[in-house]
Image (tube, rainbow, N blue to C red):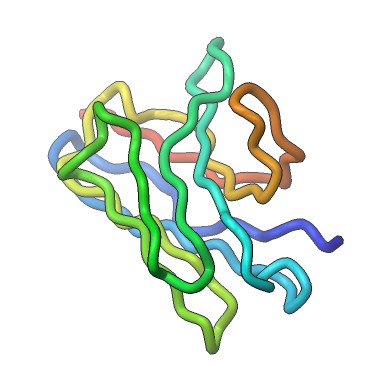
Length: 117
């Protein structure tokens, strides 16, 4: 399967917003669960969000509830992660994956998000 491609990261001040995108192949976007995960500097992968490609199910890490919103565009085979009120601890490389098992996943290149004043 072709790895999803993430984009939209960057440098943002605390309190700012970013929207990440993840574009997939047609086969990857068949009805499945897709996950956003992140890896902060020097730390393990962390689960951020789960969304199904029908857009009928979304779930978030408890600490991110109310700040992060996952969505999808079927026509573009793309999922998004809107991140608001970003905090220093949100600094990480963000990945979208299809095989998150609670600890590991097959990673693409990811997109770097840096929150800094």
